Image 1 (spheres, rainbow over the protein chains, first blue to last red):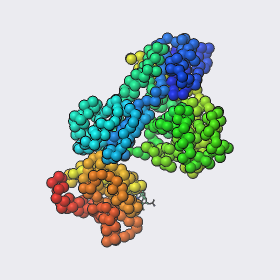
Image 2: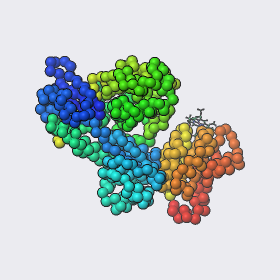
Image 3: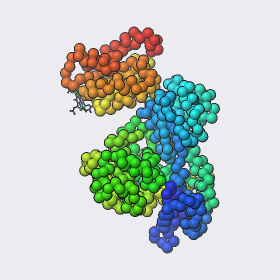
Image 4: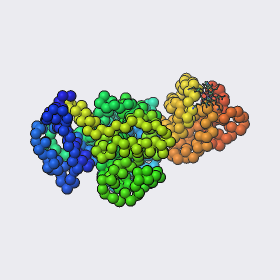
Length: 409
Length: 141
Ligand code: B12
């Protein structure tokens, strides 16, 4: 871990750059955060703002991770909600993917065709002894879809036929085993590597190899690596959730003990993403979600503001939006709003917040919202401990733990 | 033949479920046991994923009736479950009740075989007879 003494860590987000440099004069590490200028390329903007710092490091001592490109877009076609679609969604989130659309196979005839390019289509369904799960409807539908990759992880019987109809398909082992349990490894490895290729292929990111000779990883992947280490560096009591409310999306990483689901894997932590919930790039959809939530009026009153705050663009509005984001995320995860998964929020002992939000809100402002949520929505006096990752320790820890393998590029 | 089984709703009585699993296997069925605490949608989804021929639900704590009412509407949302054999057993009412009242009610909910407080082996014999009577299915076991 002492490697960190000479390394510079850079995180390129959708809204901010973060830099973490070793201390020059002893005690504390040096942290910088800059709002991005979207009229400039990432590289030029970064060099303009942080050039002098970056120049002090040689390429092999600079480590970059990025969530700036939004990640891969995924379309999952599966037989049922409880098994195929849920399992594939879980694996995709854990592979760092943010944008996921799903189609229930029986409804594929009426499903609308996405207008955007899909990076990867995932086809899944059936235990391996099930045959004839897919037919012409699938191929006809896919004929109209504009996609770059397609992967089949369904029953073995249908694999040959799928391969015949879709010559470009990558066939991997079924993600549903004969006991209806999830099998993650192969699909996860495939998606993670696609994601890496995507990051490295983006023009804007490619330029960053001018300043680093190490592989550029996706930020959620790095954060996920840190989770098992978190309780060692924070006073976190398990089980916990980690909220990363960013400019474009909100990421939630959670301990597996918080779900009662049929997903049984060896990983201790899962990830979940709300794609259009952010305070900068996704501001409009955040406001839209807020207006649709029946408790938000009461929350605004509690915060002593009115709906007019949504039209304002100042520091106060940003603070309120961030507080709303915390509330909406908790709502989305509770039974009050059924989502892909429901977390046992009454069993949470700690809520860890990371990302830009920790720079804007104070601990008590966050606790206020969490308290409001538990009282109003869950009618409970339970209060998980709130921990603010103000100095980005989670990200630096993850970046550092990644380093030994990075040299193999 | 493939059977999906489990205990419906918030019911956690597990003993019968274990016995059902063992007995079905002993009779040559391929069993997919979803265990206790299983919701209706999970049952039907498991039938779709496995291609099961039979859905055997048990209920012990008195919840069955509430779920039973939902069965028809939910099943209708699935395409291709018309040939599924549907069976339910255990304690199908709260407190005491007579089979004469209970059986027609559950048949109306969409179950082919209804076994209120009927011993497991008797129930599984009924299932075997039912399968025999179904022309297309009888050879598959
Ligand atoms: C043990 C037990 C418990 C244990 C369960 C432990 C566990 N994890 O399994 C505990 C203490 C937790 C418990 C809790 C409750 N229980 Co309790 N429990 C029993 C008890 C005493 C025995 C159940 C048992 O295991 N029997 C042995 C197995 C082998 O027999 P069986 O379950 O009857 O199953 C046989 C048949 O029914 C049949 N069968 C079952 N399913 C099917 C399906 C088909 C298709 C077929 C053909 C046959 C079949 O096959 C089995 C073998 O022949 C029964 C009373 C009794 N003597 O039956 C009450 C009983 C089932 N419990 C009852 C109740 C009400 C409860 C509680 C609501 C009590 C409460 N107020 O908290 C809770 C509910 C908890 C929950 N969420 O489900 C009632 C249900 C009444 C009703 N339906 O109207 C019963 C009948 C007691 C009573 N007379 O009031 N219970």
